[in-house]
Length: 232
Image (cartoon, rainbow, N blue to C red; front, side, top):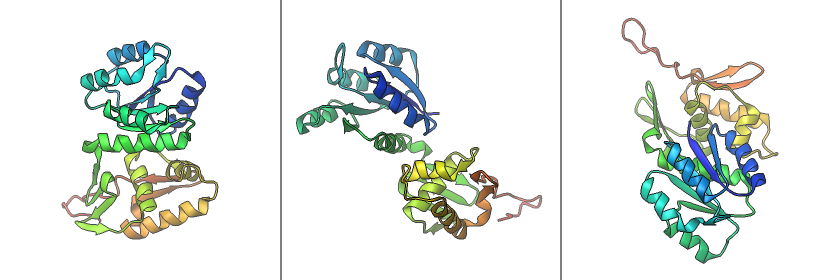
């Protein structure tokens, strides 16, 4: 489970970020000062992303960025700050941040930026293989038996979500929340139509309908019989 460290002295903002990020199945760590951030980084291993406020009670986090980057070259850093001038944004990026979000912010935008950065950081996880089907998350590409499958962007995102979390059953509401960020104009029927289109392109056996709950990716849809022949 990816780890995200929220460094923010405003407890209300931390709570908002935690609420939304936990919907992404992320492990959340917290710090309210630079000193607390240093302690967490010293104790915790494999932190994937830091969400970093700049103005903290014990200093400006921009001064800390080069040190964090030097010690943690693979970590992702997203600044979330009320400082919104071009100069501040450029300074933040040049100091080592990967992204910059200004306050006030939309929590769904933050989760989308975190998800996108995780994809960039986890290149080794960008390819999933299920028998004859390969899913390339970074490229929005699906191949089946060596042939490209033409999916729309939303069809791909749904398939990628289900395949990446194949042990979980997703309700229609959860799919709407993660793919459309809770757009109130997206209905359950829209999800059903997208699932139907995905099945028509890759085969209905790959996505199970869990009655009265939602949908689940069937990672065992491809199998080999006793004679070594492909069942699919």
